[in-house]
Length: 265
Image 1 (cartoon, rainbow, N blue to C red):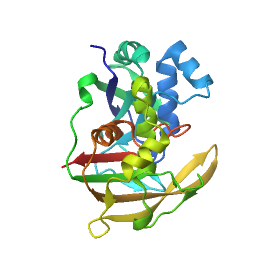
Image 2 (cartoon, rainbow, N blue to C red):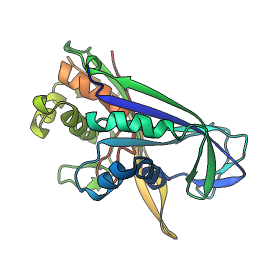
Image 3 (cartoon, helix red, strand yellow):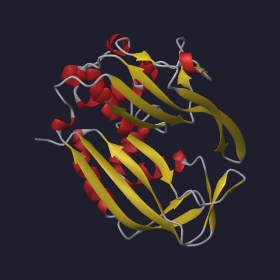
Image 4 (tube, rainbow, N blue to C red):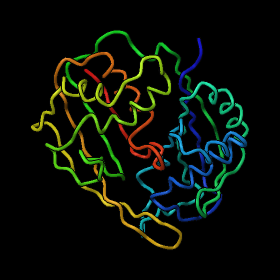
């Protein structure tokens, strides 16, 4: 059976003291394109949805933050994840990324030693044919607006969080993996309506992220929260929830740069 998803975790350590911007997704995207070689150039040039997600670097909570940047020392270590969900790319990506092991890479102005690369594959059995549980626990942290009904970004209050918007990236990724079992936007809306948000157990707060475009600093607003949805969860919705842990929130130029942790109970 072919693998449908490849998750690559890259462990890094800075060579010397440096400042890493808290918002550094564009640098990680460049690493993906460069590492993938000709396939990366093809991915960069196409306007279609990119069949991968990148997750910002995870660092120890003890790393100091100053002027919206991590103040890194050579003894700090962290990791970031790249997830591919295209059958044709998975084999190529595994070979290309293994070559980075014990090598070097640059994220912004910081040079890092790659100390280890680990890979995890998921086959078709990743998706279940059984129905899920009755409670969904979903945590998210997104530096991007969750689209409202008109498609424009807005800051949301607890009652305005729409599950179909949180899972939109997961839906598109699922359709890349399973084109024969495509989930339309209308299907996702119907699936999401089968569960209801429990506002008494849920919470959300608005957060601000600095974002640099060249020398210009912009401020993006986003959301951080934990949400409980209740109701009988159909297997298709369960599969989208599982997939969201890998592909995150956001597509197009965001490439999944919104963290999601979800489970069904």
